[in-house]
Amino acid sequence: MTSRDIPIIPTIIVAAAMAIMVMLGFWQLGRVEEKEQQISLYQAALSDGELRAFPGDNGGAFSEADLFHPTAFDCTQVLAREAISGRSASGQGGFAQIARCETGRGPADVKLGWSASPTFPEWDGGVVEGLITPGGRDGARVQLATPVAGLEPLAVPDPKDLPNNHLAYAGQWFFFALTALVIYFFALRSRAKARREGKS
Image 1 (tube, rainbow, N blue to C red):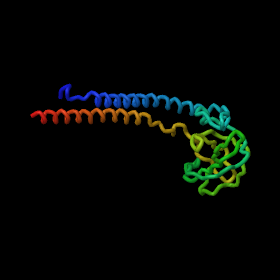
Image 2: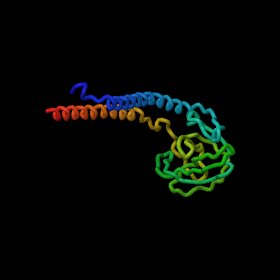
Image 3: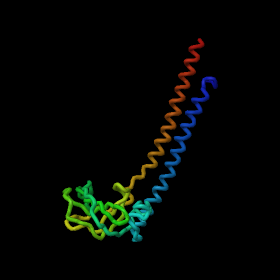
Image 4: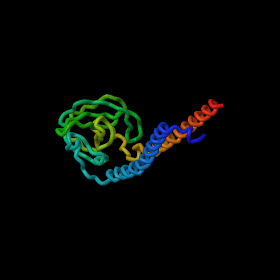
């Protein structure tokens, strides 16, 4: 295969695509360390006891820095109720009972506790004290420190359970780049062979 067998524009396009894939791979490698630092901060938040406002001041949004910190507010009205799959503090499968609350600062989801059935308990709101945890329609919700009457404690969220798949994503991008290189190499070799056969 000679230089004449290598088309310029397709080669530039493939090289640019490979460069982007490699860059994305290295970006994901950097995200591995960032995620590990984030998890360490969350673990520290579980023990520092610093109270954070929830929902946040900016239209009910929250900052990821608030996760795993305690919070307190008044649930002035229960807007909706739902039961989702959840695990009790003792490790038993069942349902996490969730109430959508009006707080005066915006709506917030509150995990009231665990039950073996999806039947919602009698609860009309009131003082909410608990931990800001990831999940829900807003990206975060509060898990009560003490479940409401009739429910059992939910399993305490562990920051170590947060997914850190960035190393796998990096490997995928590097694999895609290598695959593109191999495919293009065989395409060029096939093109060169066809040109030689056409001249013979």
